[in-house]
Image 1 (cartoon, one colour):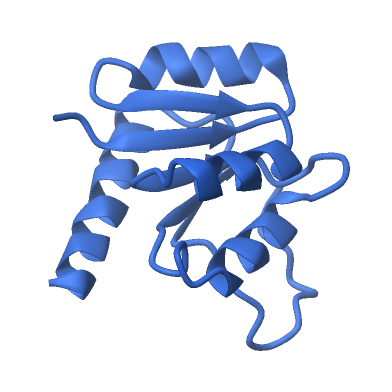
Image 2 (cartoon, one colour; image 1 turned 180 degrees about the vertical axis):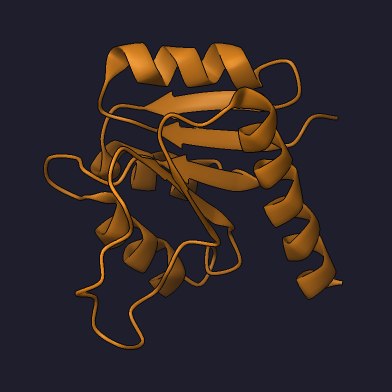
Length: 126
């Protein structure tokens, strides 16, 4: 059975590109914004959350914070894919993603990173 990935990305083109790229190795679902992504994760928890950072409403950092604060999702690995470098102005202790990739990301590297965070998550819960 393929691991389930929830792709949260506000750009339709990028969302579909990621879905098509990952669908060979992952069971992909998509959400166009952080609010929908959180609702989808709560309704059907994925194995990993792949999120853009800069989105209207709930951005990737807020989505990560809410996921980590939700007991049923606290263990969920979060991977950011963004056109921007990680923020340096975050408050200490604020939840961070398990991996942060800057676009453009080579497809084999993205897939390898998703498998790596899944492997680490499985090891942490074993």
